[in-house]
Amino acid sequence: MIAEKEKVVAAWVISATHKGDFMNIPATGKKVSVEGITIHYIRDGKILDSNARWDAVGLLRQLGAFPPLGRGKEAASKG
Image (cartoon, rainbow, N blue to C red):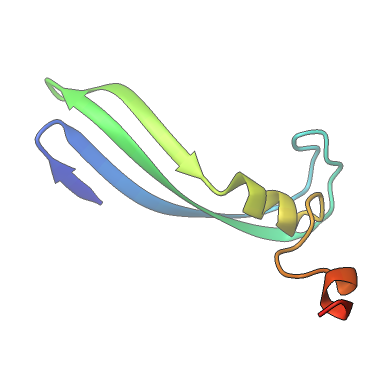
């Protein structure tokens, strides 16, 4: 966590087990981990706004709903 003037930045990791529908993906029972960062804008001790960025594609890959990184078998065979 880093704080400067009216901003606080927090890097975070969430770990969970996919036990229910998420983004129209039925439960898989897979354990997942997602990294992200949130920037909070603060004034007078109160959060005025927050901006978060997280690895949604990485989560979808872990759930099997998005192709894995790397070259596919077809591309590798052309080599």
